[in-house]
Picture 1 (cartoon, rainbow, N blue to C red):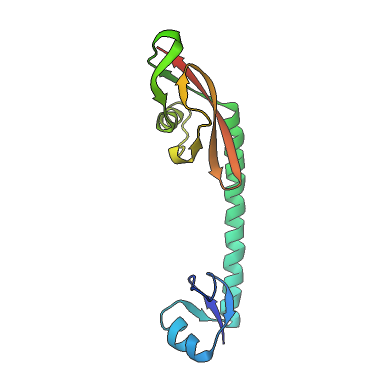
Picture 2 (picture 1 turned 45 degrees about the horizontal axis):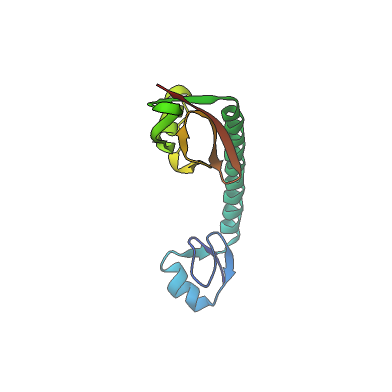
Length: 148
């Protein structure tokens, strides 16, 4: 019997995959536990339509991420921090502070966990922070650290 899986099933297949299993296993395990549905022509058509919709949504998300990356590339964020002699910063600037400054100055809600600092920001100057907006899109935000 052919079955469309609704969830990942260990040693059988992934979600939305069509697999061929024994009739008894399908009736007693897969269908009874709502792990899958029978692969009728209507259900196969629904699966195809759902996959097309998922592909369309994924393409829209990718396009939106690329557009946002282009916007972020042209902008910069300024952070004022207390400094000592020689422009050395007390402590360092964290991704949390960069995220808050971007939200306040640019209006972007950027996740601090998706930011990557190549070097710790421990002095006054200009830095470039990589931000992962999408698995395929990474943007660079210019961060200007000024001393008070």
